[in-house]
Image (tube, rainbow, N blue to C red; front, side, top):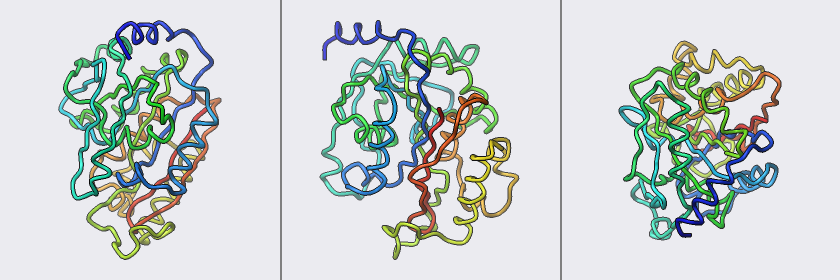
Length: 275
């Protein structure tokens, strides 16, 4: 795809019907090359929404000091993991970027200083799920980083500034996991769907109820909710992408869950669609 093609794509960011918003529980990087119910869920989600003009992804795996947006023409595929089969490292997702969308994103988030980045690319929080949704890699993808110095409420509020992008055919995806404690994985049940420690079961049930009831403040204030969420969210990196998705919900919009399963004792694949 050449630069003139990219410019034509950017010019296509016209007013459209309002795009849905997604939070995708991305789980293991192996989901990128395996066939299972979760990747089928990602494909189904893509089939049920209009094909986007571009994608803005907030991934758990770009956790930074400050806020950055990828602004290169052709982002590289980042294999930000180790100990996996060569077949996974061989995967490339050659979707174009969009410097124009990056610039517009940065302008929408003012007065927050968003720096354009030309070195990151697409990490596995982005490409491992998007490749199942749009396997032709023909949709521009940019990433917005998560500023680790800011509290949860900040991220929820920041997301609201991105709402105008939904009117231009931009699909906004948060990618992480609501329950994500790698230190407490039950290795005997690493591939057992439905396997969860008691605290993980409680975390899934409580957060699902809050999501479906629209009680987002409890989700934002997860650190105040008890031991079960302290185990489920030992670090905020995989949890905060959910807040970007929830921050974009209008009161009139429906919220639905899919891929709503625990796996390996301490991970949830629960995903969210808004709109």
